[in-house]
Image (cartoon, rainbow, N blue to C red; front, top):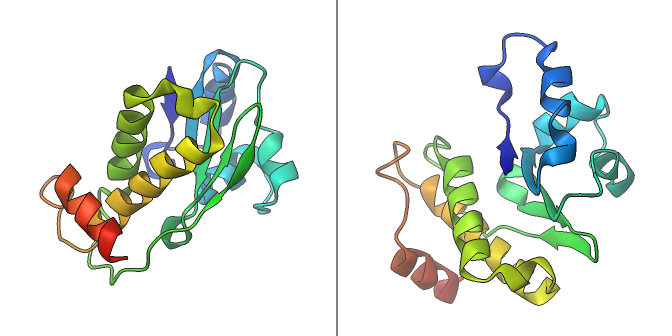
Length: 156
């Protein structure tokens, strides 16, 4: 089960308890830095703040940092993958593009959940998808193909 949340979709902070009620059941969680603050009540992006959200059943917790990339946490390792700088035109769809690419990468090779080098490659690809998406207008039309992402990463 994957859980993502978007503050713009939630009319009040009361939803926090509802979201957290399923937290012990999820395997993969992706939240943004803004959502991290909402869920923890702490503006810190430090690992201790993030780890207050960790649950024993989780396999992966990812915190996206917008143009700065993402942080990742598993049972065995944690780290950060920076993004590639682009000139953003429209950020609509960047998070969806990131999540789609991340899940695609994980499904292609589930061993990346236990292999940090592979995890970093999955997240590098996902970051590139998100970055490319911001360089075009619209959500769906801006989502890149695999070939576009590979080309983008080769030129970076």
